[in-house]
Image (cartoon, rainbow over all chains, first blue to last red; front, side, top):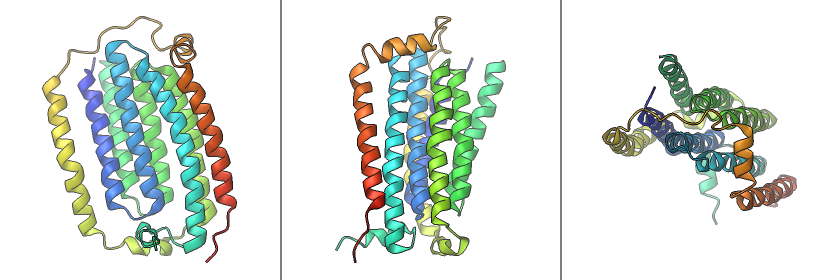
Length: 100
Length: 168
């Protein structure tokens, strides 16, 4: 049997891969998917601890997080469509200069 | 033994697919890699005796959310020449590596220090649908209802946003 530490290592690796992508990439879609990756890493940690302690809270929270992620993806993609129609680009840096 | 082999295969697939998600130039390649990572994660959930979470991961994440992302990428018709602005990304990449590697090192060290005993045995019916349902509609019913409200708000909000025309 793999101890909980193995799953937590995978979770930490996925989280920081997502964080690196969030910082390094300038494509709006890739930034969005990096966030999804970080959400998933946290979900894995929740399920691991749920299994470790034999409690259901972790699994229930993961179900709620999946629902929240679906809502987040819907709103974020609507914003992406709106921004792309407005500026004809997916470059995050261009949208940073819109605050006038 | 089987458990360890499955864990090694699934976690390797998840990490490689995650790196591919972050590195691909075109967002469509990222999205397809992310689907692979989600399915590998569903396998890890199944190994952790969370079958309902594994099924919902595939249905909602790999099925609905990623399908939505792929759909929008294709709707916007992103071509390779639209992505030229990311050609010279060396300083950003170095910065991101430092930003990610330092906390990851600290966290990996912390996890290593804990080294808990192998996962304890759980009841044979742990994580099955009726147990999850009893908890979801028992102690967790208020957050569950709030999520339905959130989904309604998000649906109305995204329709309103996508229909809007920006002036000037």
